Length: 193
Image 1 (cartoon, rainbow, N blue to C red):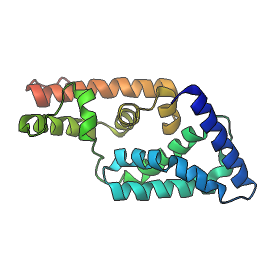
Image 2: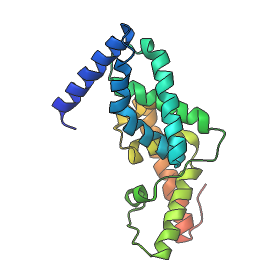
Image 3: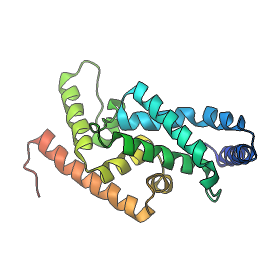
Image 4: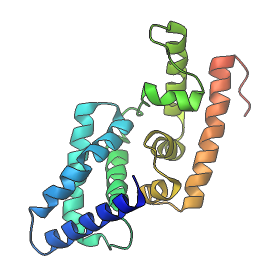
């Protein structure tokens, strides 16, 4: 998205929020229409179940609507929205099985492509997926937001409610753990503690 487009979108969001807070409940629909796809995609990256992702996105929008007055307008509405959605996903899925990472997104992390019908590559993709799923939550969340949801460091930090330096550290540590885990799974090397 170009900077001008982003500024226009930010202004539209700000005006919609102001309208909702002034009593125009219908203005919230514009926010939902604009952000429903990205929020559902974020939730899908956490749970890998389309129906569950839609439920989580809906829950996030309900929470945003109820908390709209808490948005201070200092940053982008979208950053705050993604922070709320991330927290909804994390809290609802904490008790559930770990999220899986989409197969198509694994190529970037693993450095190889999965060819259709290539069973060995499918097995390798499963190992990479398992490696991401095995990361401690704080590292996994940072990796999923930064690499698979393609958030920049600032947005990922805002979504996680953490300082940028902490997210950067979580990304670094998460990558190192992935490298170690994948070396064991894919290369047969012994894991170093």
